Image (cartoon, rainbow, N blue to C red; front, top):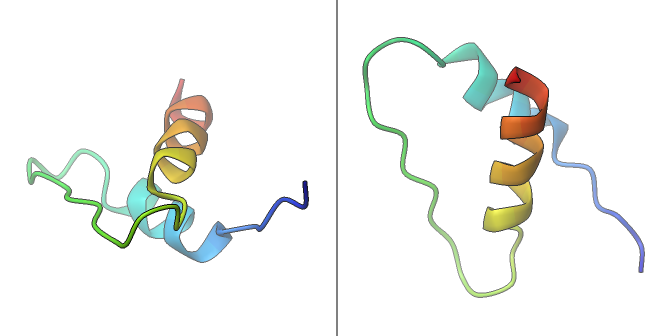
Amino acid sequence: MKEINRDFYLNQLIKKDGNGQIKVITGIKRCGKSYLLKKYFISIY
């Protein structure tokens, strides 16, 4: 299966990390929400 890079959204999450606000990821089914969160947690830890 082809991987779709979501670097823009990942960088936005990383840039706003630690500002004390809650981040909400929304979207239709199977658009990559969980995938984006997995990549985010891998990149910060």
